[in-house]
Length: 161
Image (cartoon, rainbow, N blue to C red; front, top):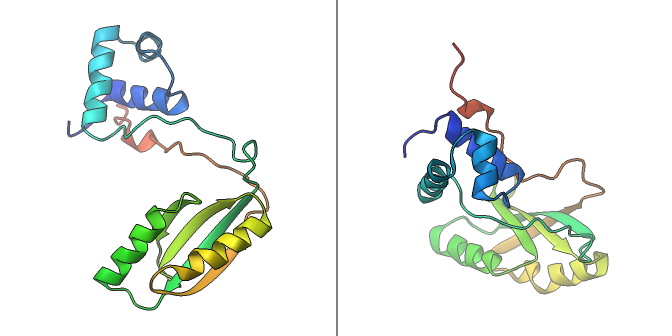
């Protein structure tokens, strides 16, 4: 599957909005019968357009009131040292996202914690002891304006004629 058409785009939009739709509901919403809809969903999954299905959990409801952005500066950026750092970060469930960044720093982490005391302990015991780490710079979220994992899809729509 190299490209997607209007039906594939509609399927992606609907599943992104509600990943729990039944195939029958999805088919009805996108204007297909059930069997072709199911085949298209499977093709989108196999081609890697759909990576998985997840429940979105409210972090506040489960007691994770702190959301921190941690910029990690490393001693050096080279193969083996970077791989060790990446492997260590992947093993930390408190780190919910990690990105290589441009500008100052090497990585930007998104970290959740119960409260400031637990974040502080996590930073001292784990983040500061990561391999190859020179320095950490932390900013705390004071409130979410928008938090969404939904991706914009309008650029995939076929041009109008």
